[in-house]
Length: 81
Image 1 (cartoon, helix red, strand yellow):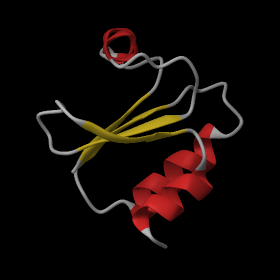
Image 2 (cartoon, rainbow, N blue to C red; image 1 turned 180 degrees about the vertical axis):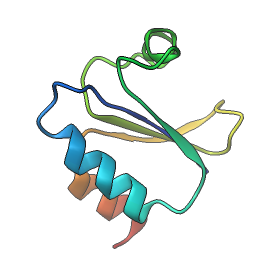
Image 3 (cartoon, one colour; image 1 turned 30 degrees about the vertical axis):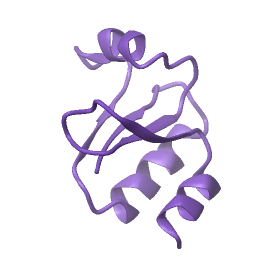
């Protein structure tokens, strides 16, 4: 699996979400915020309209999305914690 987490520096939920992902997701991924060079291109490619948004793909080729959420409790359920 592979993840992308989209955050912004002005989002109230984003710091906690980012911490949770860093502490609990054990597979590869990236965290992007609006100051990242790839941010605009990636939100467009992935149809992201809000932050935080976590997308998990089947693998790092990012062809098959298997999970998407903006809620930590849904990440916990997906990861079975």
